[in-house]
Length: 424
Image 1 (cartoon, one colour):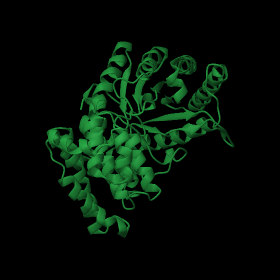
Image 2 (spheres, rainbow, N blue to C red):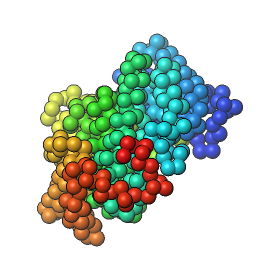
Image 3 (spheres, rainbow, N blue to C red):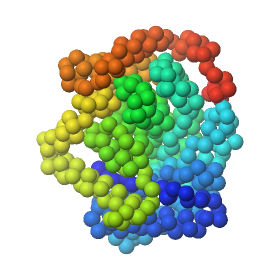
Image 4 (cartoon, helix red, strand yellow):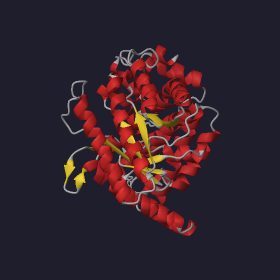
């Protein structure tokens, strides 16, 4: 396991070409602080994620110039100290700047792809994105707990968008000799998780959404992505179980960006261990990216030591990580390795993405229901009704995609969703 550290600018920072010189210094110094601490801690290697801010994708020149400065520092530390590092480049999906969002014809698409291409040439080793095709449907579906609409957004609309986008990202990676990492359904699964954390929707519902996101994110792998996928895709465990790719995960170390109920279990199968993102500010111990890296490095060191002492020790630590979370939240339960394998079996038995989503979700509910009956999972009493309710809604979905599309299209708000953009 290796640490993956991500940072962003301090709140209120102005980003444009006029401020680019100061931004370049800030990014370079943040990377320098991380790498210097890595040398001091005898780190065996790390990944730094450059997750761009909107202005850096809207004007790719800014993103590319920052990438160059970060890469130069990484190369300096490799040359002087032999420190292995790579930079993950994650441009923003700016296509939702159009209203309704335009998946395939957005005027923002060219600059997004330009940043992928020129950023890869400038030093981006690993290409990823948090794509949002179908989010214009899913957001409303989450707030109303409409699982049929969630499935449509992810398994029908999202899958089509992923095919379109990842063909291009994989091609850019191949042309530049770089790695197509993978996507993340952060805008879907993590939105559900945060809503559940704030008690706006049931945790049971959010757990099922997480499983469905896996089918969408798998499309990047089907198109040629090889991992590690992006950290905030907790569905990465399913990608690893199904496709065998390495994955990046975040858990307790992402509390600097958002709270979650999966702080330990998320590390059970990770290959990269991430902090999600942290503002580049001064803390008592040093600059926050450096501090965050140190915490990640010690976690990675512990897990690598357990693995190095043999399967029994590694399994013991893994079990502790899992057991410490899975009894208090169904979202953690569906990330437990044994359950991931059982759910993944159902996913791969589906004839297409729609059936895979439904079968995976049904298996997740079966596992959650069994844990509740056994008394091994705490679920608020008011949420128990949702297990049967979601099962009923899933059972009502026709597994013929054409029929499902016919059923759903009249129910969609065409001021928010342009079906033609997705070939529907």
